[in-house]
Image (cartoon, rainbow, N blue to C red; front, side):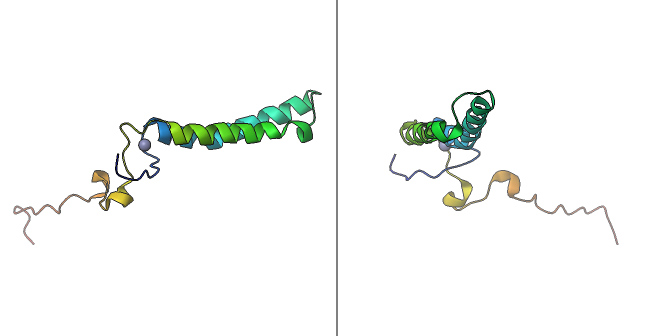
Length: 97
Ligand SMILES: [Zn+2]
């Protein structure tokens, strides 16, 4: 692996997936912490460091996770995805103007 790693939203390797899930994990943790407060548990002012732990865990995982099968984003490779290339215009010799 001599190539540097670049995040690719469309890639399904472990590292890209871990990075993609970080935002969701933060939102879920926030929701749980506020829910605990609503249910009469400890105040969010006491439980917010859990958020730092979750962010730290996902940050760590996204650094050590395998990039086996990783696909670099197309912008880095300097070409366009196959779906973005328009099909060549078809000349129809049957049509006469
Ligand atoms: Zn990847």
